[in-house]
Length: 357
Image (cartoon, rainbow, N blue to C red; front, side, top):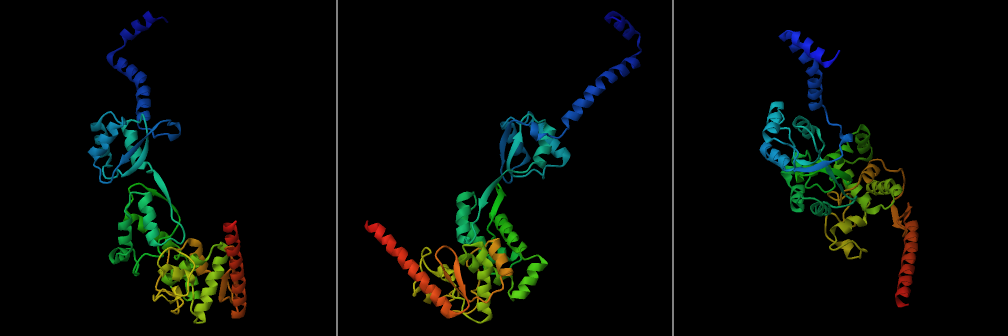
C-alpha cells in the first residue's frame, strides 16, 4: 500500500476513528514523556554537578533565585509551584549540596528533599580539653570557639542535655566526625555528649559501674587520668586497675596528669613545687578522685576504666619508651624509678655530648 492509498483510506475514517488513531499513535510517546519527567535521578549517569550553598533561614524565593543564578532551573515560578504543591516548602534544608545539571523542575525538587548534604571532617584527639576542642573547631569551621566554651560551662544548656555537672569537660567524646555545613555550636556539643553517654547505655556498662563502685561522672574522671597516662592501648586497662586499687586502699592517686591540668604553662617535667599546688585536682595532696575529668578521654580509656584488668598493682613508673613498669611493692617501685632515673641521666649526657661536638 502506497502513500496515496493510505491518505485515501484515512479520509474515509469518521472523526471519532481519526481521534482513536491519533490517540493510539500519540499515547505511547506521551506516556514515555510523562514517565521520563517524573522518573528518579540516576546519579551514576550524572557527569556534571553544581555546588549549591543554601544558608540557614533561606526562603523558598531565595532558594529559587540561587537555583536560577546557577542555571539549575528555567522558571522560578514553576519550581516554586511544584515545591508548594508537593508540600515541601518547610522540608527544604540548609547545607551544601552537589546538584546534577539538566534535571527538570520535578526531579530537582525531589533531589533537594532527598539529597544528603555534603559534610566535612573534623578529628578531635583523645585527651584534649574543652578549650583545645573549642580552639580547633573555631579554626576548622565557621563555629565560634568562644560560644562553644560558653555553652560548655552554661548550667542551663548543660541541664538541657540531661546532665547535672558543672561543665562538659570529659563529656565531649573525641573521634573523627563528618559534620554537615552550618551545624551550630549547640548541635555539635549535643552530638559529642550523646556519643559519650552512649558508652554507658548497655547493660554491661551499667553492671561494670556497680562492680567498680563508680558512677558515670567518676568513670569519666578516672578515664581522663588514664588518658593522660597511657601511650599504649594495652596498658590502659592496667593503669585503670592500678588507680582503682589505690582508691580501694585509700591511697592518694598521685597522678601526674592531674598536676599537669592545674600547672600553668605547657606540659613539662613536674617539679616538687608543682606537687604542692593548692587545688582540689591535686591528687598528691587530696585523697580520692578529683572533682571531675581533666580532659576528654577517648572510647578506649572509658572502656578500660569500666572493664579494667584484675591486678594488684599500686605503683608504676615510666620506662622511657612509652610503656610503664607496674609493681605491687614500694621497694620494687623505687628500684624501677631509680633505673628510669639512670636512663634519663644517660640520655641527657648523650644530648650534651652531641651539642658540644
